[in-house]
Length: 197
Image 1 (tube, rainbow, N blue to C red):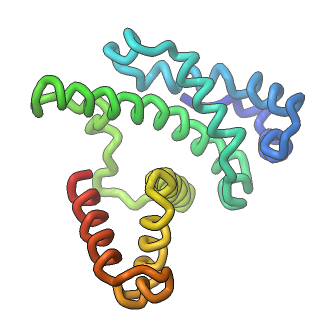
Image 2: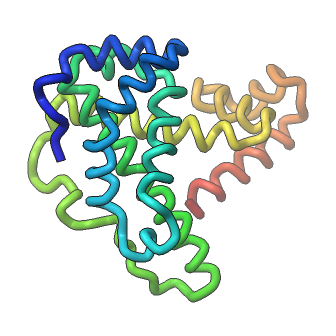
């Protein structure tokens, strides 16, 4: 589903002003993007999800992300980068809810549950991603990781940050003032969670 071409030229500055807190401009962005984003949501929502959620629920969740999340300058640089990004946010609201539903069903019903959110036509096959697609993908992965990391206790967040910077367990323990054994236990726990994920 494509966004209307004509009125997109001023969407980037409008979105910047809406994210800065202008309710009037936020309403204009909402009015401009509501129908195209609803079309995207209705395209990816599965029948089981339609019974559980209204499309407007996903639309409001999408706009909550759009108005509260900080977008990097590369995303807001031009409409041809911004619009696919907004579309992906809407799709991800539906797919995240679908994953949560399937995970809950998996615990109740067993492991043989079809994964509707991984359609074959969405997987890249034999082609290089365009620079805007790569940018969007990197941003989405970074946002997902940031969301997951924010759910960790602060000590685990600090350990993970230092681990990603290249520090070993002893150095992390010294920097954070905790015993290295505690650091290694935390690292082992994080590894288990990643493997389970």
